[in-house]
Length: 384
Image (cartoon, rainbow, N blue to C red):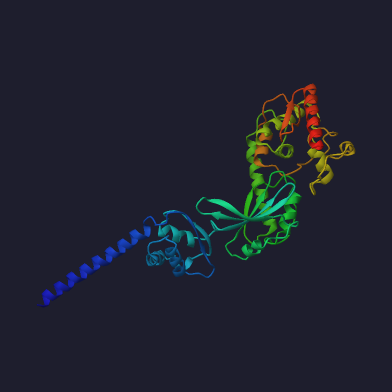
């Protein structure tokens, strides 16, 4: 009798174990299976939240099939206590395991609100935008010009959100002084500028920052990136260029940057200056004269006067031979590349053509015709 009872109990125990194992395997398969989300969503995890609140939120939004399995899986992976505040892009069909990994590994938010400070050549803009999870495109919420416009109410609202991201977008052709002035005036950052990096030594690009980042650290990141670009581009230079060093390449690239905003023209503009240097001709480029007047600390905002073209400064390339002593702005990667790989042309002249581009010429006679056309366009524009 006892032997029969023991046998029955063992059978029940084994069945129970098999059932438990089955439930565990089923739970694991649910945890790792493709999720029910049919379109991407932005999951916001508030500071001080917990895994129960997050799992219920996910279940309500149709991102997980079972909030309990989500929590058990997070516990089993020993990640329940690693929940991070922020906004996280949850992709279509994301598994519970993938979502747990996203919200516990830390790092920057991957969706939600972003405030971008755009540093431009003639004006700066603050843009408040939000990532649309479906299109993965940013939707602009508001923009304003710091120092000129009153900040919209939404700016203060988004500044108060802990998961708002911040970015600095530096345009090609801005000066180092312009960048430093923006950074030291933005209350998201802290600290002093310190020693100003040399002109041309900041890489135009987009930089994500977190509140409280030191201004000097941002400038150093920009400088480090530009050094890497300069070294890489210099190593790829063509043979026979009239450039003796990476420093001269940087100067030429900055002039190219200021002379044209059209990507397809950079190689041609570079060829003009390289041809002039090879022939011992003066560069005769207005942006260098302007830099001699402003030192990059303001926008001239008008045409050059004859007296300014005749005034001797180290940057007046109508009067000095060769390259000026320093860059005149921070060139982007494309202008650096154009400086060491110019188009093969016979051009030694160019002038605006009225379309936003330039007319290039090999001879003075041809150039004079192009200048006459431009004067006619100028006169027509002024008349209109």
